[in-house]
Image (cartoon, rainbow, N blue to C red; front, side, top):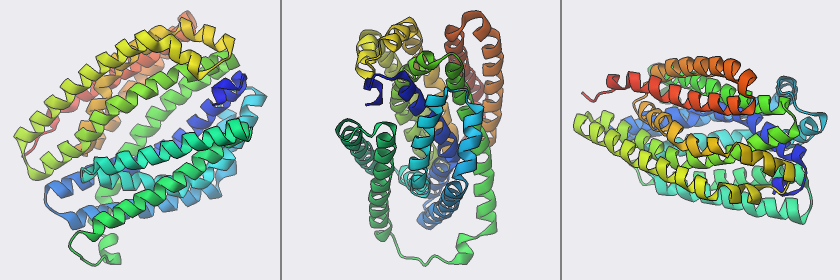
Length: 402
């Protein structure tokens, strides 16, 4: 919607707003990832009560974090904008977006815990339903607020805010229905605050948070470099990044399945199931990556023209389409391995691998960007994907079911 309003600055504002919320929400992605791995292992071991308690601990933590983000929204916004070299128009529109959408923080983070539980218990159909309702509501309201009411960036923010509220309510209804079918066992404050369980949860979540913040920093640096190069390149990279995100949704499907299946296999102590799961996920993931690359090659120019009607952005995008053809093949390995390690709750290895990969990315960026410009920026991102996959593959033999 924003891409077709004819203003590159508005596209850049949404890109910057997205980066800020990546730090705020995706930075706490451990609420989903850590919950999935711990719940899957509990279910694999036949302990449904432990799985429920894992969710409740994550939900309480999510609510506390979400309320804290609302309280400190203004210093967070000002700090974020000082780090991003956008134009005054871009920063003003991004601030509008953030100040509206931030009010869904507790619900958004609690939804991560809900999805973590559903995925850990292999209720993927319910997650699909929640995502369909979330995105369907968002699309309809985007059209109404942006095209119908001409609210611009504020319309996008309000659409997302309402959609996240609706998705949270649906998630709670689904979760309550599932939990009501399990054997009743009272939830006590003592069990909720079990020191050993909390220590394990925080250890897993700490490493995941470090890993995720490094990941977000890499993409934020990518966006910020585009902002330094002007509104047109910022918008161009934001448009092309939609292809990377689109492919990630498909490839992450196998990673998410891996989280649940690997966790179950480890909880049940089945080495044969573990090996079969890993092999199947890699085979399906690589085939999908090849299909996505071919799809982008065939339809890349057409999709760019659908996403924006700004001539300068369209012309600039065509110069960098090569990188979106390569992206699925370069990134499939790290997505799938992420899922395997999350399911195994081997988060310290994920943290170490991410730190190594971020270093490789920074070295590539500071070497290639001065030489190749925006092409160097995209090449650095591809190197980052490959480094993530290679470093996790080095740790893979450590995962085994006893």
